[in-house]
Structure formats: structure tokens, C-alpha cells
Image 1 (cartoon, one colour):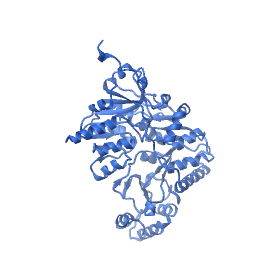
Image 2: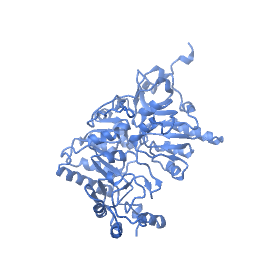
Image 3: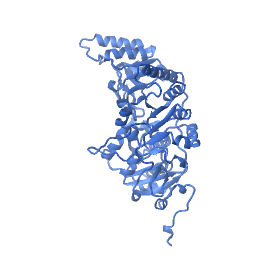
Image 4: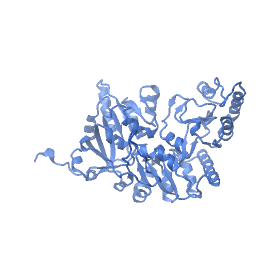
Length: 516
């Protein structure tokens, strides 16, 4: 018998590959990246730190480094679900290997390249990514590199710790490289819900998801075996997400949010027992809100969001949350250990979906989410900047916040009232970059207080925002700006002084502080 036709030796890792066709394609990461060429558009798995390829992307960075050392120009266009593991982003940016990045990033080296203009970056709503790729906005997808946790006997793919855009990548890419990561608990199989009913206009049908716990898809990905050019085995844990314990500021913000929930319950706008499904961004403020909920009166809560953090695992374990839906896990090292150690318990209480479903505007609207997202700054009328420092330098990206803010039942934006030791106010006369307009902002919260903007005209909004959310160091200056703007002849519906609207930002650029 020709040795070429023999199956590779079955290792502990390849026990996850239960299909002989795919076992025949096992190669090293170094061999796999030979299928990636300069100028290719490469789509990789990963949402946050979860599910990023562990072997192929470092091998790609090394391939690019060697090519550059030999005088070759080697860059790729990089498409992802959202951010990816920081080391992946850093390695590719350090070798100047990415010419176009989409749709979200959260790593300093890549951020510097983007802000220097050496890496193009397209920042879009996460719910739009799949459709835009299908429509060809980013050209042809040459190759997808997708981490999975196993391959079934019939050749379907068991997802890993994130789903993100992986379904789309597997469908649209010309070639596919699979990383089978045996570190992911085999018991994760069944936690996923991969929906294959989406379509482009005019063929769309309603997304029949009416409850957080609903399952509308299958537990595996499909892939054409002929497209799979390489299978790489790994056994590497996900990078842990950073988790900062809630401080006094984040706890104060959380307290205002929890008081707001009680107010809404008392007015009959939220159910007294389980509120409405919660969505929250990543960070210590979000975790502080979750901790506060654990000590509160509400039980049987649900979550419909992008990611599940440590705080959510804690709420599930203690029965405060009965079920959570997301597209990825964003866990600390301790959170990863907790999940792995109790995977049978969590598998029955968590579902991971494609991000085009986790962030789907139709579903968000139907479920009536309470959307809680962070911001860099807001202006006195409720316009929010969540992405650009001083209006020009990208921080991370809009991510999914717009998907939830525009379509949620209640849209809240949370932030400390100051940054940089008090030299920056998060409440300003006018934001120099707008991600969420005043029409999408219902509630602003800082540690100073909460501004409920629902039903208020712009002139009334300005006073509520300043009085409730601005830091005392900036409150007088903001009131003075409003008074002068409203005194101008023809001040209009939304009074502004165009010459002074960005005076806070200009003062910071010139002096290092927004303080008057």
C-alpha cells in the first residue's frame, strides 16, 4: 500500500478528528501558512480572546517576517469577528503584515499603525460584517483560518469558545485551514447554536427567535471538505481576558444603574422579578453592575449579549441568571478554569451563536434588551463618542454597541465622569466624533449620577446631563457654555457656539487638560 494513503498516527489530539478525510489533511502550522500569499484576504476566527487560532497566525507572522527580511512586500487583509487575542494582533502588526483591518481591534501596536495611517481600518457595526462580506465589499476572501474543537464522523465541525463570523468565513472563503484545539473541553459540544437561515435581500425571512433560551440552528458548522487544504492540531488554552476588580467609581456607576432598574420596576416598565434581557459591554463597570445584581432582589434574569464575562458565570452559578446567550466567552484565567471545571453545568445554561444573530437588530428589538455600553465621552445633548480620542485617534471601535443601542428597549451609556486624573471631562459641549446620536441615547450614567433623557427636548437635556453626570470641576464651565449658546440670536433648537463647541478638546491639546 502506498504510504501516502495511510492515515496519520492517531494522537490524543487527532482523536478529536473523527473523520478520515480530514485526518488525511493534518499538517504543521508552518505547512498550512504556505497556502497564504501576499495580498490575500484572510478571515480568521476569534471574538475577543476566545477562539483565536493559536498556531497558524504566529506561523503567518513568521512567514511575513522572513519575506520582509528577504526584501519582499508581504501584507494581507485581515477580517475577524471582533478583536482577537492580543498576541495575534501584535505579532502581525509588528511585522507590518496587515494592510487592511476589519471590523474591530483592541491592541496598542495595531492601534498605533492605524492612527499612523500605515494600516487601513474599517470600523463597522458587528451585525453588518457578514452581509458586507457576502456582498463583496472587501473583495474575495482567499482563505479562512478557523479554530474548532473537533470534527464529527460525518465531517461537521464542532465550534470552540467563540462563534463570531466563523459560519460566514467557512462559507465564503476559497480555501480553509482548520485548527483543532483539543484544549477546549469535549463537553463544549452542544453549547453552540449555528443558524443557517440567514439570506441577503430580497430573500430574507424573519429570525424566529422569541426568547433568550430559544435554539434555532444546529450545534455544528458545515464546510465543503474540498475547500479544506490543511488541518492543524493544537492543545493551547485561550488567552485570558484582563479583569480589573470594580473600584469605587465603577461601583458608584453600578449603584445608579441598579437604582434606575428599581425606578423602572416601580413605574411598571420592567418586570419586577426578572427585569428584561440584559446586554452589557466588557469591563469593570459591567462587572460591577453584575455584582450589584447578585445582591439585589431580581432572580431568574437572562442575558442576550456579545460576550460572557466572569461576572456572568458567577450569576449563573448562584441562580441569579438562569440563562445567557452570546457569541463568545471573555473570561479571565480564573473564569476559564471555572468554565472548564463545570462545563456540564454551564452547557445547559449558556448558548453561543453567530454574531449576526447575537447582534441582530430584529432580535434585539423583539427581546426588548436593556443595553448597557461604555463610552469615551458624551455631549450635553446626548451624542456619544465611543471610539475616537480627541475626535481623531481610534481607540478600539464601535463593535456591537450600535446594534444594541439603536434597537434596545432601554439604551444606556456608562463612563467615569473624568479620565487622565481629571484632566479630561467625559461630558463636553460637543463630541468631535459621533458614534451614537442623541436619538439612540436614552440614559447617561457616570459616578456623579444618572441622566434620564427620555422625553426631553435638547435644551432640557443639556441641564439634566450637566447636573447629573458632569464632574463638579467642569459643571460651571458647561453651564456657562449653555447660557452663552442660548443667548445667541437665533440660537435654535439645539444651541451651540460653533467657535467654542470644541474648546474643551482644544484646551486639552494645547495644555494637557480640559480644565478652564
